[in-house]
Length: 344
Image 1: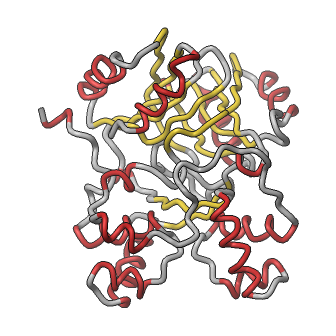
Image 2 (image 1 turned 180 degrees about the vertical axis):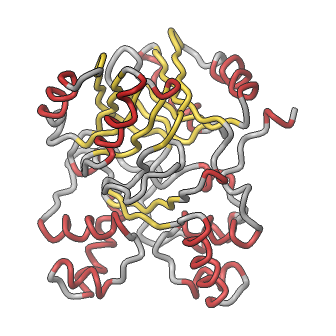
């Protein structure tokens, strides 16, 4: 039935805008003349379309750090509150620079977010100590993210975008990391200049080499070399943020799975192939996989849970929670005006 079709993350855009968005999801720093050549339009047309997307859907390219790759631990934090407390506590969390994907779930009575650990395997202790003392906070739980099966620079646009394989290959940057990214043996070290550059890219992933040179004190040549090194190592990736409710699925939900350890990798890799999945990763805790789901409506979510999810091997327990409102998206920097962002 139509309601069982996967949600289209670009369904609210016209055909050329969809192709431009797909191109920038493949390479957020691709020059407009290269995108135009691959799409068969002028670079001026690409520039105009991008300017319009920035206005109409607040589109922006973000240069983001893979925390696991640089030796930091992302934590999935859930904060259960009384209904009157969830929104202000969530907004306070969204203002922190160590949080991402802050959302209200479970009808607005719970907050879910990703928190950057202060060091490998550790989370900011004052945060977890302070939250339970906040009036009307009922419970706080935190589980470390161990592995990402699907997400970050890969997402629904990459999977369902309109570009053909030849166009995807033409736009894929030479310094893109091999897939899958090699298992982490040693974290990629970051110096002060790297951190300054990454802070700028987290605001605007298309910041020019000249501007990055000013921010870091490096030469533009050094900036380009270091960008390529960080990207090829997997430490730096680029994501396209489309901040508009018109481009969201009708129903977004968090999905927590308790999976037999022997089946964990198999289930995660299977989830990564489901068109309903925007993110999937392995975590610590009794529910050892978290996934973000997008469906057209409640019926489609029901059929997804009782069909593909129920067919997964080794599932012991499932929990779902609708995403009520997104307060902050992929960027670690606070949003000026928190609005609906893509669910993940």
